Image (tube, rainbow, N blue to C red; front, top):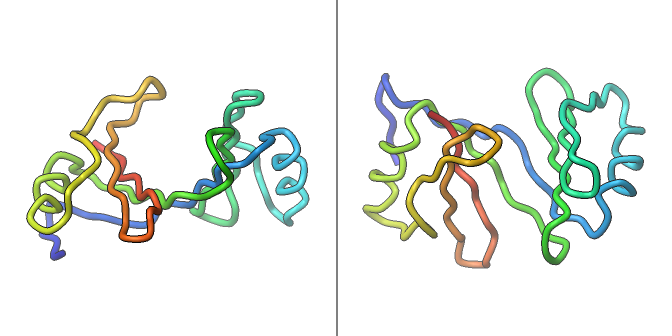
Length: 116
């Protein structure tokens, strides 16, 4: 995939799907420099690791993970990806304020695209 000057795409973080958000949060908060940015008890926690990397802990489904890719033009990225990949749906506005869509890689891993 190529990008233009007006469309940017970057890896923003990784979210682990965990069996127990509170247990995992307690574990990852021991990482040096880990800062808790957001917490919905028993549902989700978001930690900042270093300057720009995010680690999400999501109490959803079987333990797994998904990558988070950010962009400044989610609809343009969705259209461009459709040329070679079938997204799992159209971009949707989330209740937490981001516009997102997912793709599933050949091994079943979820890759979430989020942005404006």
